[in-house]
Image (cartoon, rainbow, N blue to C red; front, side, top):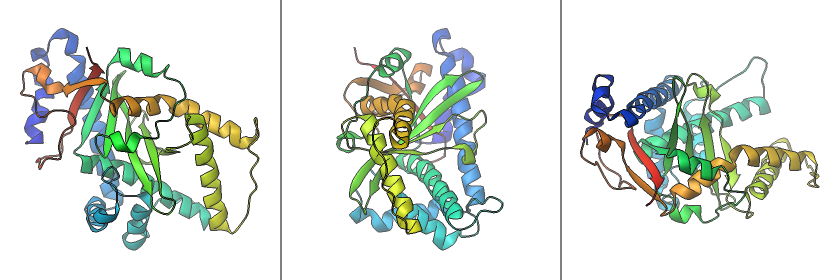
Length: 306
């Protein structure tokens, strides 16, 4: 499929061809596609040729990685260390651990965008009624997500005043600890900016989002201890700093966990949004990896099955 031709279905000059009740769709598509293009462009400007190198790293490691993980973040960090040691983000006065933390942030953001690119640049909009249901979904952590995950990465997009906002959802494989993680990268800054793309990992274990967040917090602390040569005995009692941090993380991300769980199930009815403008359905959901040309994303609409 020629993605540039696909994107023409959402061109502003064709807005009148959409039924009135769906005219928000091409507006959202254009805004989201613009955001994502800016993020890719900023990443490629800071790290020229990085996605080609990361794709090569994925190909080299393909026999050892699960299909649902594009490239573990440790591999991304290694590519940055080998090829871009002077291009990672720096802050005035930062040294040692501070620089390492910023470089790790760069790697996490590149992993989010790179996985989305490699998966075929797919955006999914969840129907409003389902969004309301997912916001009340509770605290369950779907540990079986890797067995059901449809693509290496999804960008969940929604209409917003003056444009669109979204979040990258993808899976990480921690090779050292043999553990799967859900990673959530909300793209919600007023203007798309690579350095304003946070990435929240959540261990796919623990039964609840809160417990997964607690284990994630403890794992991060253990990693810092290893790097610093220190030993911390964290207080995990109710009301402790660990407990409060986990509660905040769980509250902020429970919706995204529920959305990932729902999108990876057989409950959604998902179809290509261009179909509403009279275009042919490009593929069934989930789409198989195709040798498409062009960089424009594909937009899918997901709603409750009837």
